[in-house]
Length: 115
Length: 112
Image (cartoon, rainbow over all chains, first blue to last red; front, side, top):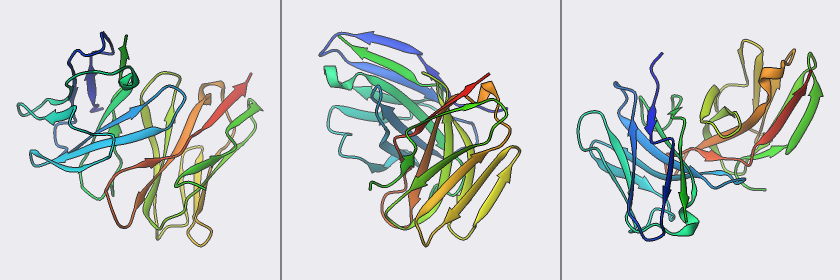
């Protein structure tokens, strides 16, 4: 069964460092998303991406964040200068269609710890 | 209440019993989706119900949607220990950003 793959599963980084979280969405999907979940809190939307550009972004997704689809398979989330409050589980998701009319498939997540 | 609010926050039942979780929301939706999350793991899609649907089944899962009350319920019948997880409802609004808005989730524990 196709799945969304995320690497690494766990990343520890020092405050102020840049991190890149990687995702391989399902191959025939066209819409890609990043969500995050701070420990014990809700899953929050960060950004959606379609046709090589950002479709939507939340207020969390400030100038420190960027996304990229560098090739035909990978989808990355970069945090330029990490803060302690960026510590969270980051989930990548993909879906076939827009308007979320079909299910979104989530990866297993990357646990980011900023120290 | 917030968009996508589950009730109860935690539920503990005996194996074999049925588990019912509820979700309420504020703003009109395109669809509502239920997800399961095992501790520290990813989100697994369970079922999607569209705004023009009232009930859907998938195996031991039954989801209802009442748009007049802006609420949904997830019923797991004949629960198993492996059903122990957190369950989230997520709504997609008719207007505005096309994203999933998640609730806080219900932590379900099935006791053997």
